[in-house]
Length: 77
Image 1 (cartoon, helix red, strand yellow):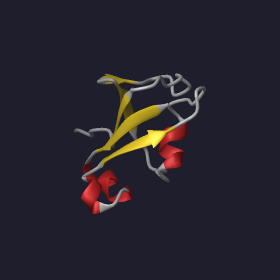
Image 2 (cartoon, one colour):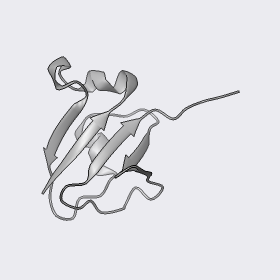
Image 3 (cartoon, helix red, strand yellow):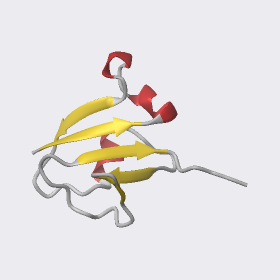
C-alpha cells in the first residue's frame, strides 16, 4: 500500500532537495505509524499527523492512501 509522507522544517533535509519534502512510500499492510520515522532515518523528537490529525498512539496501523506529516514539535515559553 502507498502512503504520502511530508517532512516539515529541517526534517526536509532527510529527502533529496528536488523532492521538496514530500515522498511516497510503499509499505506493508500491517505497518504502524512508528515505522515511518525509522524508515526515513529520523531519530529526533518529532510529532506525527495522519490525515491532518496528531497521532498519539504510534502503533496506529496505516491504511492505503494515508497522508503523514512529520515535524518537530513547537516549543514556547
